[in-house]
Length: 339
Image (cartoon, rainbow, N blue to C red; front, side, top):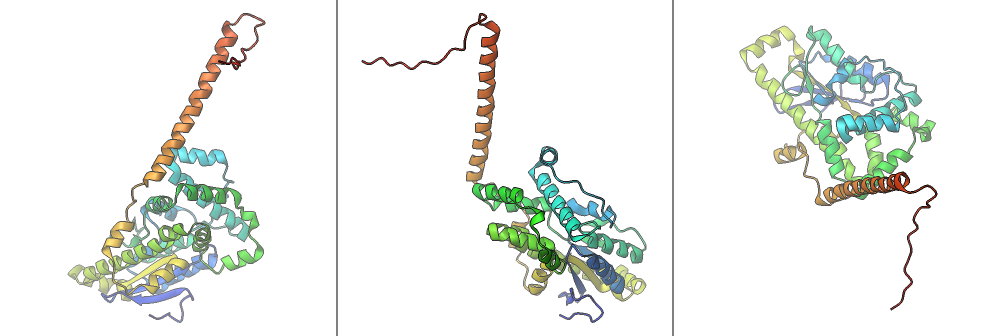
């Protein structure tokens, strides 16, 4: 493992078992320098494949402008509307996006969160000489992160009902206004999303595995897969002709990921891939029976409350409509008879 002298300090060069050069760039997500450095890495190595920390559910980000538009403050009504349309996962996505935008306002950032992926994609399009299609399988642009719905569902399933209540309270009670100037300065030199997950992990340790560590292993596996496919392609006649036309970068993959994930990928790069673990973390586990029972209990209590209020309203309206004028409301009496 070596770091190219002309590369940003968060860029590292690895080699796959098949001999494919892998340049991993770690982004902070909140510094425009990361956007420029991601573009610089892609332009320098002219790779055959660009690997991004995105999934199919988030690939529309690549069509967004680098300069972001103002984001309105998240209201309870907007959150509930998102939940009604796209489920609780959609609501969580909206909350995270709004948080990142608010953090950007405090940092004086006017570019889209994840702009380093947009920048790398746009730079790749220049030397590919076509508009590459983002793909979770084979292709010039590889989307290497786990499906965000799987990640969020695994995170929620890892929590008990009480943990979920505490997590909701954390989101409602914490404010971006509490971030200090020192905090902001330190965020400019770190992966802000990983820092957010680590902070949540202090309150909810069970969240770290699905939100951070599982994704480290998943992206390492996907990156290794990408190298294997590229090596097999280069061994074909078509691949050899492509190598002659493409040049030195034909055997190179550039990966743009968060700085926190970069550490997890690099440290275990040469480890054997555990396929059983990959299968396990690629799926959502069944809902624990306790959570299922609590969820249906809440539903039942809610329905019973609504029915009770409806019945009480019906009795009251009926009494007003059919009682003679001047009649007072009946008052329940308690019998004092003794036997």
